[in-house]
Image 1 (cartoon, rainbow, N blue to C red):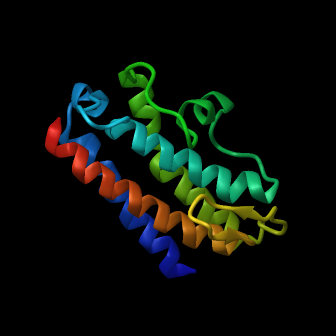
Image 2: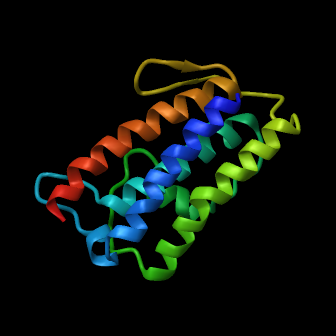
Length: 151
């Protein structure tokens, strides 16, 4: 599992670079032909990780229900994210990853509610969810590589 967490850490570092290299206006811009923006994709991967790993394990998430409602699958940006919201999302990039790794190493993930993903892959355990999460974050990083050309 050490490699799984290291891959996730690498993904999160790549996501964090968007905060360093793009303005808040650029993070919020939804380019023509797209349904979301850079900041939505970052919020979405954080929320998805919390849902797949924590909620399906029956454990409390580190994100609010309001954040889940704003970034869960099937949503799109309804309004611009403020600087305070962007700062919170940036902090959660690493806070959620660190807590997940600590909780996993401490054996907190005991139960798991099976979940069929939209890709057709069925998650049956927290370990599977952590592996799938890396795949999911990679998909969204790819989308962000496309969006960044237009902001």
